[in-house]
Image 1 (tube, rainbow over the protein chains, first blue to last red):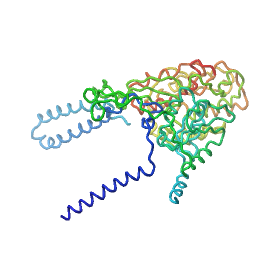
Image 2: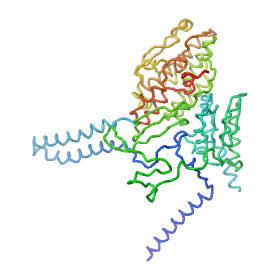
Image 3: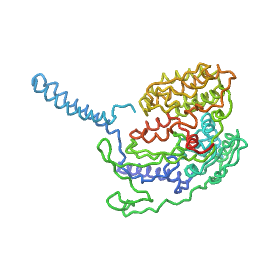
Image 4: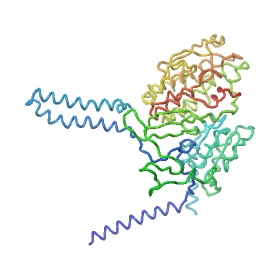
Length: 117
Length: 423
């Protein structure tokens, strides 16, 4: 019961603080928002298309490169343990695995993942 | 009330955030505001308390300046600076509440008005554009998205973006944006229509030059076409132009302190300052950031004349044909590569060379000349770099695009004259 009361107090406190801040922000200086002031600043012209769009996050290529190297390590540790027992077969399997990952790295390279930006 | 006025006094001590627009004839005066410690130019009007138009407005620039004015959060201030004794600008009346300031008192006037604004005097709530959306919100769904699926509506008259092919095989939305003509990193008046997929420009075109039809300032390079002028004056003007450009370019690159150094050198460079430019050149060569930023970016290998052509290793310079310059031992300097970095180095090297020439020239004069080598290539001739922009910029990431545009030192006012409008 005490825990519930404490949670209620915390909830009321933060809700109250949030509302007070909202109110204070509006009360201090309500900016009269007009249509021209809502337009995003692009250098003096308005937008021609609406802002709802699927932005192309080009840095996904970085994530791809990370995954390629991460997966490589995930497989390589157990592989290194059994490599001597399994012999040439294991070496061949690793070669196949790495060459598939290299395709991903080459794609990331083409997309500029390794360029300084 | 005591707290309020104390806060206002405290706020008035800080630099005035101002959105600075360079109009016709105001490029260098606007640049100089960056050296002013009591004014803090902002990258967007939203961060500013005041709009400062330096120089004359033009029909093409006016709508953009009016919109930038409305985007300065009210209560706001608006100023126009004109040189001493210059005729009034009839277009300035379209910007509500604009105060015209002539001559050297701009900073004081802005500071006084800003202190008054912070103390609660003045109003500045009037917009230049009417408070109406370009079209009513139209849609069917709960958020007005309407139409078929999520993407059929036309909210506020602005269609949603369409999908387009991309080099990486992903088909995502392509945004068409108009950047400029008062976008601070770009030269004033440059407006690009860019098709962006992510941050890669897939399609670029240059909008009309807003300075079309305005008169151009009668600087020393233009005077040399019709009369004899001192070589020292020509060369100091060239060095100043390059150094002031460098100041702006370093600022866009984020190197503010170095930019201020270049700019202050550009404002008062004299024939004896060649060694200071050499020191600046060495500081630039030491920094690796610039090489990362501008190396192999925006490569132009053609012989385009001017510093852009010479940065690609073509030693064409109208000064080599002039006997007075040959007598001074003039040899064009060139760089290799033709990328943005080579253009940076080329201009700094030319500024240093120009100051050395000015020193040895003494009071020798030259002209009138048929072809004058200006800071951006031969005056009145040569291909317009503006025409090359679309082909050059397509396929670049946004950061490289801005670096390239800045590295070309475009001057839209000069370009308007080259395009056939008389001075």
